[in-house]
Image (cartoon, rainbow, N blue to C red; front, side):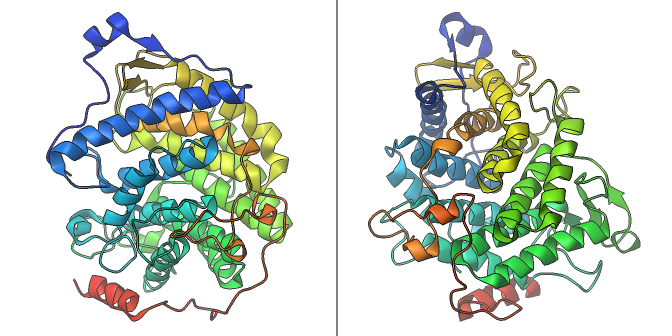
Amino acid sequence: MFVSFLTLSLATSLYAQSSAALDIDVKDQDSIKSVAKTLAGGIVDSYQSGLKKDLIPGLFPDPYYWWEAGAVFGSLVDYSYLTGDNQYDDLLGEGLAHQIGEFDAFMPSNQSKSLGNDDQSTWGLTAMSAAENGFTTNKIGNLSWDVLASNVFDTQALRWNEKTCGGGLNWQIYQFNNGYTYRNAISTGNFFLLAARLAKFTGNATYTEWAEKAFNWTQEIGLVSEEYRVFDGTDETRNNCSDINQIQWSQNIGIYTEAAAHMWNLTTNDKWRNTLNGFINTTFDVFAEKNILTEVACEKNGKCNTDQKAMKGIATRSFARAIASAPFISDYLTPLLEGSAKAAAEGCSTKNKQVECSLRWTSQNDGSSGLGESFSALAVVQALLVPNAKPLATKSSNATSTGSPTESNPAASGSGQPAENEGAADTIVASRSLVVVIAVLAAALL
């Protein structure tokens, strides 16, 4: 937690007097880009206001945790890619560079008191987006985005915990943090997704194997049910993870859907087609209300905490990427994205550069506004730009991050086959550098 409070809006009573609601045509790319620009501008303006006070690039002030900053930066990297508006690129590069940490794996020492595997992997997935998008910056020296993402993967693969529960990732990295014994679906889910995206980007089969392993474990332990519901987590101290916390969150179903789509794209295996169909059925059974996404566990009862208010943004971003990798699911998820985007935009108002968005997309004026709400609105609105975006880059298209923009590779955009296996990796992925091993050992000893 940080020391100052971030505000994305004026006081509601004053704001409503001269604010303007956002109007969007979900079938018109220019309209979508215009609304996305407004939302991105509001988020960046608030970030810069916080930056002037705290002088720490890459962070949003209290009450927003480090992981959420990583998710927001990821959506702003996507914003640059999807709209062609690169005015924030240097600012994003500065923030991302500042949070890389001592081991080039997004493990900054000042976050150790609350550093979870899910937090670290959220930043790793942002680095993965930067690699796929061909995002360029001179802020990270000789590093490249894909190496940063793979460093995150390597540290987490070495933390895969088979001492109890047969595998999975603990929620927290350090044993002294509360929640270390908890195995939450999002930590292993982010790892599953990072492995699948690295497999597509590099063509390295080791990542495919790890993605398969991670997903299989979630099914075996019961975090993913036979009906493809994704539950919150379990605890190694409670009957060796046999007691499952069955709360369901939209971000979990989104992350697992995206990862399964990438795996289908890589393998065209019916296992992943069936898995995708299962996740889509669950999405509509649990989270959709007339083609509008809801956070069913907390939205209507008004009990969503700060983190949970950002979950629909993560879910909708993943749904759009899932469609790109597995086009056969478009007919199901596109209406959900369009309905959600229209409702989210209509629940946002602006005054100058300040933005206020509702948490509930099924009804506006719920009295909730903040970073999570604005991030979610941006994510779902710009998700509608994904089908018309240029193809994502791969390693073979020279997608580094320090030089000029990279060529794009159609094989990475959804229907193509993965690149040839480049270089080799052992069945258990090897750490890329001694410092990464040191980082993991240090984490284990603290």
